[in-house]
Amino acid sequence: MIDKFNQKEEVKWSEPNYIYHTLAQPNDPDYRDQWGHITTNLEAAWDIQKGNSSVTVAVVDSGVIPSHPDLANNLLQGADFVGGSNENPVEDYNATNYDPTDENEDGSHGTHVSGIIGAVTDNSEGVAGVNWKVDILPVRVLGADETGTNWDIAEGIYYAIDQGTDVINLSLGRDGTQSSSSLETEALNYANQHGVITFAASGNAGTTPVEYPAQYDSTVAVGATNINNQVTSYSNYGPNLDLVAPGGTYNDPDVPTSIYSTWGYYNSGDPVSDYKGIKGSSMATPYASGIAALLIADGVSGVYNIKDRMTSTAVDLRSEGKDEKSGHGLVDAYGALLNKELKNPYVFAANIKNGAVYIKSEMIKVNDDGTYTLNQLWLKKYI
Image 1 (cartoon, rainbow, N blue to C red):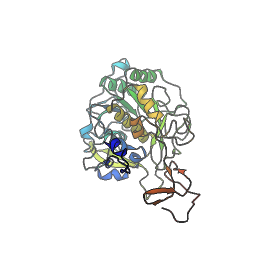
Image 2 (tube, one colour):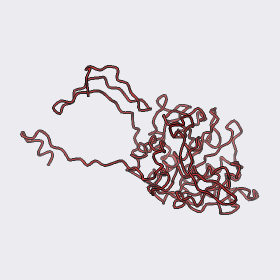
Image 3 (cartoon, rainbow, N blue to C red):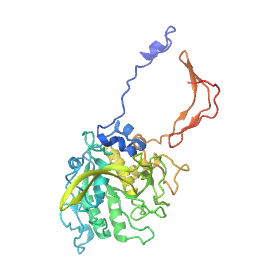
Image 4 (spheres, rainbow, N blue to C red):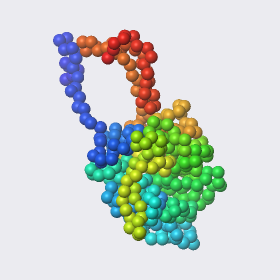
């Protein structure tokens, strides 16, 4: 009908009456402090995919506060591998117990990471997760002092794979100048061979190389950016770095520049639920893991396909293409779901008269931080 009307001489133009809609915004009260969700383009992404409980992300970390009201509905039971026996073949893991409660009295690192990936969202409480719905498998491999052995971590990886995990998040690391480990290499390769994609933190020393296990080719190494989409000074870098994501800083007391998420601690044997803002490549990694879970929920499968989607659609922050400071760039949830690299928009000044637009300036590409300057204005007054 549109084509038919447009062929008539008396019709100036004919077009659909397009339907507009708001971008998805959850009603979680502390969402306003989660700037990382905006910089990774999640609001646009959520109009395509909000996540699915059929997807499982294993958080191999310090454990979790299982009763946290903003996490409990997205948590699987999980297991604890701290302090167990190292006598069996590592792939025949032997869990210490099946209570992954974080016993750290200073705060639960694993709870913070889990909340970024999948805090229960749009529930009028606390924060929003990258995924509104997802199954999070807590695997405790770090003790109350936030340290652990590569044997326990390897056991946790094999366990997670056997539970049907789709994504493994490793917000942990050791010195990247040390020797590689056959134990770690075999476990991570086993994950890839079983279709499980693994993300690991680059490290927080501000040096090169990235830490292990991020340094292995079998993982996706993730560095950290600040609220202005700049790579942070503490983020480790090098040729093995794949992506960057929001990790936060503490520089501005008037602006929430850290990464705000679920939190908690152990108090005289009882877990306490809370929220807190902290910083680090440990926080950047679950942004990437969470976006991978969105892709899987949307039908993207295969370790290579997921990694390629995320790296090929990342936003360049420095030189075009991959570099050692920012990898392929800042992960973009919306671009990854569209399978398209989104470019910065152009702006210009113009007059609008009788429905016509008259350009009155140069056209300038918006900077990565959203700023721009129009240097050539052809009218003193313009719209």
